[in-house]
Length: 197
Length: 197
Image (tube, rainbow over all chains, first blue to last red; front, side, top):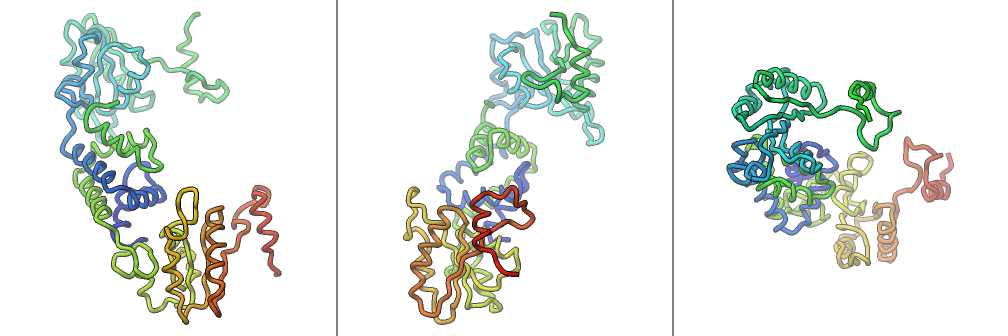
C-alpha cells in the first residue's frame, strides 16, 4: 500500500468497472506525472455528469437538450421505432447506417431477481408514443435471458395495438464467424431462422 | 458519439493509460448511474493528487509526510539500500518480505532517446546518501535495456566508494515457469548465473 493521497486515488479508480488494482495503480501514477490541466478536464467532466445528464423526453437517450438529435431530425422515419436497452445500443444500431427510424431506450431489461420489473423500465412511455403514425416496432433488446424476457413482455403489451407490426432482430451466426465454433443455441437459432435464397 | 457531457467524460476517460473506448464508455455509464458521493470521492482523490503528492526527502518514494514510513522505521537496516526505478517497485520488493533495508527511488531509468539522462534521475541524491553506515547497494532496476543501462551507469558511479559492495538482482528463470517456454536471453542468464547446490 502506498502512503497518502496516491493510495486514495488508486482505491477510488479501482472501484470503477473493469479497472483492476494494477490498472488503477498505472492510471494513478500516470496522473501523478500528468499536466494538472488534464486532471482538471477529467474533474470537470465528472462534475458535469454528476450535475445531471439530460435524457431525451421522447426516447430516453442521453441528450444535450430536452429532445435528442435523432428525435429532432425531420428526416427520420416516424413510422418506425427501434426499442433498445441502453443508450450504447442506440450507437450500435446507428453505426450500421441501416436504420432510419427513431429509438426508444428502455433503460435496461426485465430482471426480477435484481428488482427490475416493468415499472423500472420506460415501457409506459413507449406505449404512449404509439400513435397513428407508428406502424412498426423493432425489438432490439439483447439476445440473452433478460433481453428475451423483455422482448416477450413487450410483444404481449403491443399486440393489441391495431395495425402495429412488432418485429425482433434476427438471431443467427455472426458474420465473419466460424460455424464450427458457434454455440448450440446460436446455431439452433440460425437453423430455425434460415431463409430461402 | 453521444451528445453532451457523457461524451466529454468518455473522451477524458479514454485518454487514461489502458482505458480503451469501450472501457471508457462502460465507466462513464457506470458513473452516470452511480451515487453522486462516489463521484465526489473520485474528484477529491484527483484534487489531492493534483495539489501535489509528497515525496520522501530521503528515498524519493511517495509519502504522506516529508519522510516516508520506511525511512522513518528504526528497525530498518541502514547499511542496505535497494535502488529501484519507480515507487511501484518498492511495493514489489516489500511484498517479498525478504528485504529489511531502505530504498532509493530513481524516478525512472536512463533513456537518452526519450530525453532521460542521469540528471533527470535521482542519482545525485543517491550518492549523497552513501555515508559510512551504508555497505551494500542492491541495484533493482528492471531487467530490460533501460534498466540494464541504468545499472551499468550506477556501478560506474559507485565503484569508487571505499568498502561499498554493489550488487544486482539475479536474472534467471521465473519461479513456476517452464524451461521450454523461457526466451533465449532469460535462459542464457539462468545458465551463466547458475549456482552450486
